[in-house]
Image 1 (cartoon, one colour):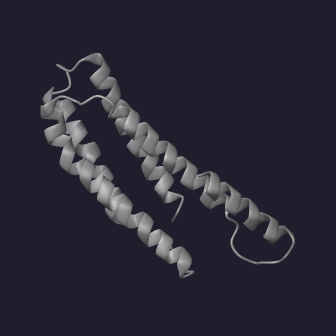
Image 2 (spheres, helix red, strand yellow):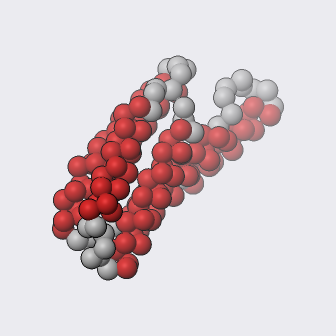
Length: 141
């Protein structure tokens, strides 16, 4: 992350001195830092294992989010290198929607009522962070 800031600063200086007409790296750097914060928050929510029944239901949607975000970010990097428009966020949005729907199902079924308060808090933190992830991925679009 420190190297990214250094490179962005150098690119910014080059733009100021008219040595290049390349894109402004500042929005990209801000978005990368936001994504880093999302990953940190997801890690914090996962510091302790959640109850097995909850994990069993959320594992697949969460893995789909992970894969969709990975493919989206790689496609964004390719598009940036090739000076093309960024890819559509559809697969990541579908995976995030599936996670939210599964979490809502757990609530409706009452599966979250028996959870310890700290587990409920971590689930809500995870849901919030994934919504932030969605917004931050949109920053690449």
